[in-house]
Amino acid sequence: MRILITNDDGINAPGLKVLEDIAQEIAGADGEVWTVAPAFEQSGVGHCINYTKPTMLSQMGPRRFAAEGSPADCVLAGVHDIMPQRPDLVLSGVNRGNNSAENTLYSGTIGAAIEAALQGLPAIALSQYYGLLNRDLDNPFEAAAEHGATVIRGIMDAGFDLTDAYSLFYNVNFPPVPAGDVHGIVAATQGRRPGVYFGAEPFTSPSGRRYLWIKGGDQRIPAEAGSDGAVNLEGSISVTPMRADLTDHAALSRLEAVFS
Image 1 (tube, rainbow, N blue to C red):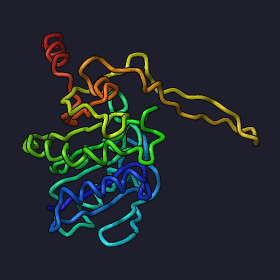
Image 2: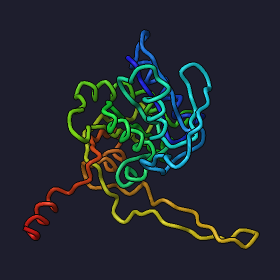
Image 3: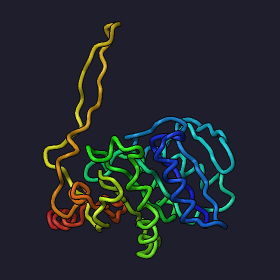
Image 4: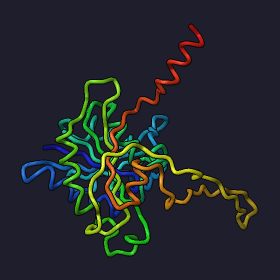
């Protein structure tokens, strides 16, 4: 089995090492794991692609490359240039911090999975929720490291619909608890944390120039019951099937009635 892995935290991120170990377990002794990850952190870039300038690639080791681009660029580089054959599976992560609820829409980790799905490839994004119970562990990614392979195998059993125009991919979030405290694996919808938004905080540099820090909202607020952000805070791993089709079909029907 050939697996391509990437992330948005960068080639040196600890979560990528966790994913490398998970991917090796899934690929098996006769398999191949190829790493193509951003040379620098690309958190929050979503499904950005770098098509207005070239992307420089650097080989860091056997089957290991850094790209000066986004996570989606890394998928394109791996599939169309670096790997001699198309991968059987694309894994993105393990992200430092959750990509459940509204965070999904900003995530470069998800962006890589979207690009893989658009290329007709099975894809899974994996993220580790941070919280008071796991952030100070020797390995904050402990839940992902211990349960990651089991979740991926379950998703592979469920299957990937690669025949549609917008192929199915999966978003996995590990809860903010130690591995031994994980309650289970839950198929969940994408949630929305009520009243949680990104914002901007202005500040002035010593030279008098004006800048903004972009700030996230409170990640301890649960989303609606049964959704990813809620089950994560309850101690469970969430698995959310997704497609890149953003059409609201109920609204489409109403719109057709208006304009018919």
